[in-house]
Image (cartoon, rainbow, N blue to C red; front, top):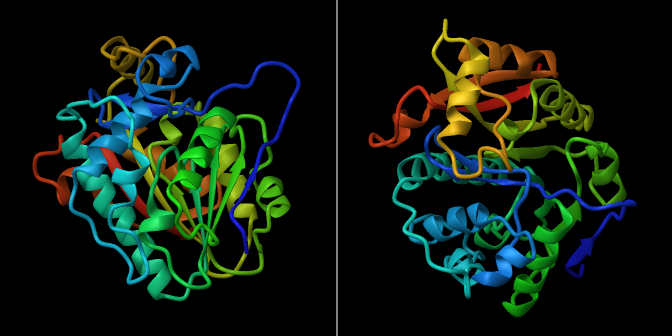
Length: 299
């Protein structure tokens, strides 16, 4: 099976799917990320935040499958402008450990389809490459186009990877997946890493419901949620968080909720949280009470 990249075109300008760029609340996945380095990135409207995530992750020690490429992230980052990434590292360390573990557990349990939502420069399709396992990466056009170029330049086995474009605010994700070869009758692991914070609560609920509608037996969800303490006014928390961010106006965060409210949103969308972790549970230097990592199944 050859590497495939589909692009959905719509009239008018395409909106980008962003990657988080700031650690003031511990997330870095925006609804607008792409991948040229240096001045070209700004000219093309490419978010530097997705590159900061990938570059930070490239410096981490991580597991890989027997057939996987342990240097995949480094290779995908070639040519990107260096970034210190020190503020991102504690939270990203916890998140990376959590999502890497979710993928390895799923593969060991016989799951053969993994969907990476808002993938950016995620390297897991290469790092955890396994016979008969398909990775589907969803993101918006410019990011996918740049990543497709980078992947082709790696001269590596891409047979288990499909890139597809989707705007989570407008597109029917279940239909996009069905149109690109995803088998709804087989178990799937969905990864939502640093994505939901950039969708408003109603859109996030709709998006999660669409994932739940891809109703194969044994479907699982791994998600990172932006949370704040109970009793604080959510609108003010969101406004204050965006005010501290460089991209607070152009790529605003929209959903930061108390833990209970966030888990209720998941449940109403059809997902039951089986287990939760605070990022600080996995990386002691991560700020507690900011990032909730969730394993969920269909409720």
